[in-house]
Length: 166
Image (cartoon, rainbow, N blue to C red; front, side, top):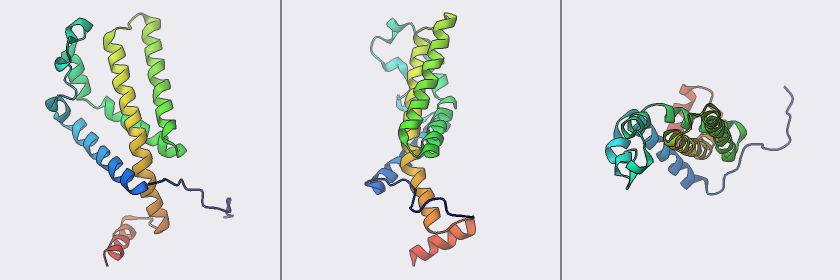
C-alpha cells in the first residue's frame, strides 16, 4: 500500500494532558449519571428546584424521567463520534445544533411546539456539545497512543502498558 501523505496527519492538541483528563472524567461522570439516578438525586435534572418553574407550564415529572433515561446518552455518544470522525469538536456541536433545530422546526410545523419541546431541545444540545468536547479531547489522544505504540489488539495493549510501567 502506498503512503498517501508525506507528513503526520493526526490531530495535534495543545495542552493535551489536562484536557484529556478533564474529558475522561466528563465521560465517566456522564456514564455514571445517565445509567443511575445520580443526576436527578443531585438535583441537576430536577426541574422542581428552578424558581417559578410552574409559570412555564412544564410537565416536571415527565422531564425528570426523560432526563434520567438514555436519550441524552445517545446524543452524547453521537457528539463524540462526529468530533472524532472529523477531528474537530465543532463538527459534533454543529451536527447537534442542526439536528435539534430540525426537531424544533418539526414541532413548529406540526403545531406541537411547547415549553417541554424547547427545554428538551436545549438539554439534548447540551449533551451533543459535551459529547463533542469529550470525544475530541479524550478519544483522539487514546487513538494516537494506539498508533504510536502499534497496538492492534488487547494483548499488545497490555504488553505496551507493562513496558511503560517498567
